[in-house]
Amino acid sequence: MQFAFFNLMSMNHPGEAPAEVLANSVRQVRLAEELGFDAAWFAEHHFSSASVCASPLMMAMHCAAVTSRILLGPAVVVLPLHHPLRVAQEVAMLHAITGGRVLLGLGPGHQPHEFRSFGIPIENRHGLMLEGWDIVEQALTTGRVDIQGTHYRIDDTPVAAKLPDGRMPPLFIATATPALLARGVKAGATPMISQGYRLAEQSIALRNSIAEPWRAAGGRDPMPLGIQRYLFVTEDKAEARQAAEGLLNLARNTLALRAAMPARDGVHLRSVPFQGEPTVEWLLEHGLIGAPEKIAQQLIGDMRVMRPSHYSLYMGFTGLPRAAVERAITRFGREVLPVLRDAAAAIEVEAPAAAA
Image (cartoon, rainbow, N blue to C red; front, side, top):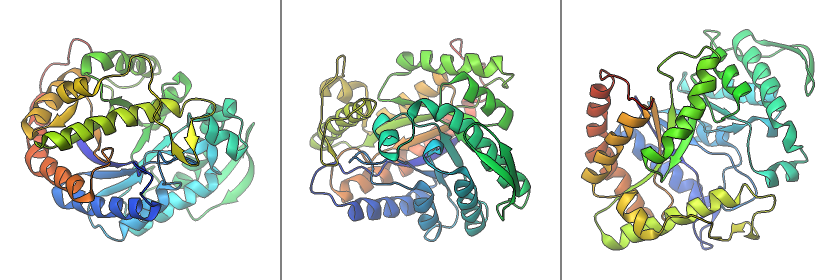
């Protein structure tokens, strides 16, 4: 099982500048490498405080220069918002610069305001994703692209993007769309879902909704699965409460960005409550916030139910000072991560969970 460090790069309060947010992420990726994380992911979002990272491949390229072991990749490139020929060439550059330390996450996107501002019809996103995926794969595996599709028409074009072994980097896809999942089976990809703050029992239905079309398309069993989780290691009650408040705000922002027009003041999202949202007290009790032992125990229980092959772990949602965030990252790496690795090895030999 892989354990990755996720970078959303949000401005958690109006006083934060993008340069500060990005610099903190670079520091934290270096720390994650020192602590033994397998990979670092970089998000892509546009036009809001949810993320100041418009190009995860640029962030991965920068972090390649200050790391030596950790895998790096976009989670995800929102492929319909980019010309896939450029994406393929930039992935090839990252592969060459890092000596192959690349994971590749692709997704169709889901935020209407991003598509509107780029002038791309959101209803075309799945078609753009499928054709764009073919282009990226052709370029990276053969060094030539020739496609006459609905959205892209590219005459036979040589590109210096073929990877040395002619194989795609390990591929992750963020989608619940059956056609894209079927394409993922063909490509040997790992589907990713966000469990967020939810209990495993609340999320197993989402996992199964992915597994059904995956298996129908001939996907192997057990299905590979990447899961996004939010956590914060602290035994300080004030820090824990601020972390829970930050997690609630993250949940509000995530939902708000699915609206046609998210509520914003400039780029800064407004924290708009939603029906059925958890309370801060619920998050303090049930969320992955607290002492290392609590977080390890909860994640091990989740692993037995959800059966992930990859965890993407996000700790930057609190709005706490940099020192507090880096202290939480360090404690996770030293006190929780080794326990999870031991548990994952044991779980792999257990019988599959009944809910899987």
